[in-house]
Amino acid sequence: MRRRRTMTVVVVLLILLCGEDVRADYSVELAMTALYYAKAAYCKAEAIFSWTCASCARNPGMQRVRVFTNAEHSTQAFVGVNESMIVVSFRGTRDVTNWLHNLDFIFAPYTHDGCVGCLVHAGFNCELESLWAEMWGYLQELVAGKGIEGILITGHSLGGAMATLAASNLMSQNSLFPSALKVLLYTFGQPRVGNEAFVNWLLASFCRGGHESYRVTHKRDPVPHVPPCSLGIYTSPMRYGTTMTGTRCTRTAMMSLAHRVLL
Image (cartoon, rainbow, N blue to C red):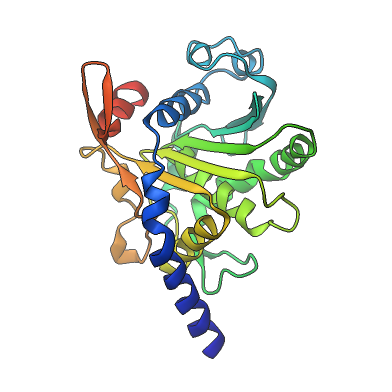
């Protein structure tokens, strides 16, 4: 009990000390880049691998692209490198199989080191685990190369939940992942992922490592509000939304843009 109380105090202090600094780094340009990576994850695997899909054209220069799929779970994601950045993008809800996992509101323990009392959405975690073993191996291979400075993780809807859990896996694998590698998490229309202990641990991990996390939502999209908080599931409070004015996108406008591009 005393250990848990001490961990809670440390987490709260970390969030209070650096929460505002993390939010201050929000980049509309990078959010746009992530948005089209998120959309590209919906394309056919062949088009992603050759980087010839319509959304791929918005982010030219991708190399070493590898697509990961699981037919049983109907999940798909891709990993690639664009200049000095590793890109990881997860596809969102596509069919009935995905919806069955979306509605699996059962809590599952998140048993990674340091995450005391953490619980996550069992369905979302199951979807990530259907791809993660292969993805993790490839990520380690890419990180071992020269010139990699960061990793951008993104996804829309279910893909956003999977992206958040993938980022948390990286946070928990810091002994195997270079501490100098910056993680940038941008999700769109992401549902809630874990309980309060998980959220606090993840925020503290991002803060401690100088990483960034942003959850872009649309005010009329019900997905970011599920599962309901009454079930004890929460997500990162670093949330942004916007409306487009001409060609200029502001911090309060990214959510309607994501709505039109992705939904």
